[in-house]
Amino acid sequence: MAKIMKIRNVGDYSHYVGYENRHPLVCVIDYAEVSPVRHCLNNYSIYGIFFHDEAEIDLSYGCGKYDYKKGTVICVAPGQIGGKEDNGEEVMLTG
Image (cartoon, rainbow, N blue to C red; front, side, top):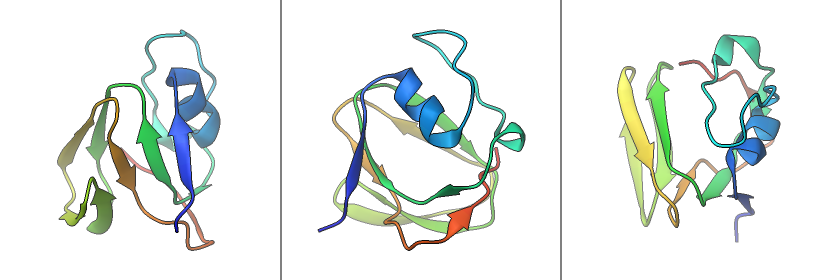
């Protein structure tokens, strides 16, 4: 069974990517300013909009796996699980 990280608030996600949280409810992250992170599956308790600017990547979302292409907008809502299982490698997020 894959380990799932709970994203309960904006601060949890900011901490995960190493970004300074400046507001308790809203955060806009420039991924060029964060350190590499390991993949993980996330259980979201917040709404999120992600602009995927990487090469094509396979991510899990809900019960399925999807291949997201460069330029994709990914939206998440409370109660949803998505991401990629941790395979031990660090990746540099973009977008």
